[in-house]
Image (tube, rainbow, N blue to C red; front, side):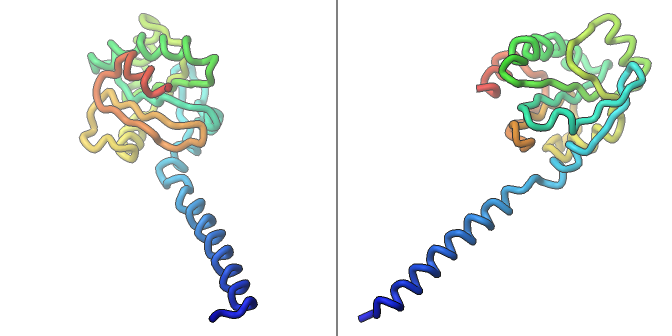
Length: 169
């Protein structure tokens, strides 16, 4: 038979172990290297400014990798803009990272303006997309991040409005 003192000590050890397990679980929940690089990244914008992704941390984000020469990318731009307009009041953000030349992006945006920020990502953007699951390197590629900055979805190919709605729920 176990003494009362021994039961108390074992109980305290069990509580401490559970607390440590919780601490380790939260440590495992730390952002990935790719997520840390994303939120530290900065890209030039077509108008000559700088797009700092850190400014977008803390709210859900749809991050779209695209190019002007990519037909599905061009088709989905109005859909992404519609999503931004309709879901901005709920905190959602959209960013486009162009894997393209600055002059081509400027010309495209004159013809097809969008209300969300566009960064000129070039080959760095292709590497970033690969970090988030675009193993084939195709475009368009969309990654979705929750308010904590963690990737929660990804999609290679044209994104449709119904898909964006499902991700927003």
